[in-house]
Amino acid sequence: MKIACTGRSRALGARIAGILGAGLVETRTSRFPDGEMYLQTGPLDESTVVVGSLLSDDSLLELLLLIDACNRSEVSLVVPYLGYARQDREFRPGEPVSARAIARALSAGVSRVVTVNVHKESVLSHFAVPASQVTLEAEIGDFIATLSLRDLLILAPDRGAAPFAASVAKRGGWEADHLEKTRISGEVVRMEPMRGEAWKGDVVIVDDIISTGGTIAAAARMLAGRGARGVHAVCVHGLFAGNARTLLGSAGIRELAASDTIESENSRYSAAAAIARALSR
Ligand code: R5P
Image: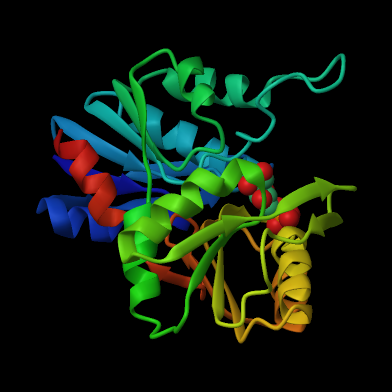
């Protein structure tokens, strides 16, 4: 078995390869004069794990070309961050179910799909091949335990993320709670105070995705105003769109951490072991 990665998932692919004792396939991309993408891989084995997060339209194309380049091999596809998953239904007439379109496209030429903390589990049913997700609550809990925080509360920014926060909190035996979030626009959210008294200790806000940072920034400002000692944020997928890092810094977030499903300076813990376990099953 060999591991072939897209350009944006090289570090995670190498970690998965290290855990599985598999070789890495060299891949390179360039552009034809008209702008079309060109891709070439090195020698493959009978089975290949293709690893590539869906971060942009180019990364989708790279993933499709890489899967096709591996067509003489049995392909297991790992999509650590499955972009477009948030458009998981037709919110307004005439919209596509983008998650379905992506899942259908990625099903061709692969025998199974593994992803990480997909935004809605129902998206997995759109794949035409067996698809599963691994979830990183235990990894997040283990990472938080390294931060030496005191009187810790694990907080979900909305009701939907409450089970996720509860699961992270259980890992370390910490308290968990959630806020009530109302989204005003793509960038602006309003937070209602949490239950009970203001938390005077450290708070770690956990979420599956940080995109614009608006959700976490609104929560952090409210918590700081209510007397929290330190506010930190840990997510699975750190998209950090636009000026998200600046926004979160100015909202007083001290530790800003994400996994390596999207590789960046904030990748402080890894999804590799969980993915390797799923591939070994
Ligand atoms: C929403 O349901 C997600 O779980 C995240 O809370 C959301 O994607 C975060 O977006 P942003 O960082 O743009 O507020």
